[in-house]
Length: 146
Image (cartoon, rainbow, N blue to C red; front, side, top):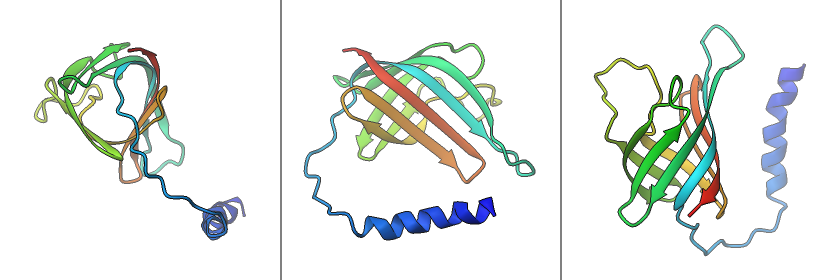
């Protein structure tokens, strides 16, 4: 019964959104720049189990818009790799090119590499990437300095 209600909620939400007055958002989102600290989460669901396995790490991401480069620091011992590279913006995506990432090396840590959906409001910076329904990576960061 709970699962049936879970599927009913998005339908009701979609129908209810048609009744809300909308206004055009003509302002471009601010460009993330500076130092951000917070939590990285790696969520993986095995095909034969329902709950996600979640790995977490506290990281720091520095974004420099003068040359569109990034640097990942913080707890890079087990879950997320310390890395650096370049990025580009095409809202709602940020695309990262990690200079330390190797597609041929065995996977041991997550890298900030590839396209991510992002949200930034001037202080809160969030990114999300996912693969099908079994893997998601989330960055939940706050601006700590310029």
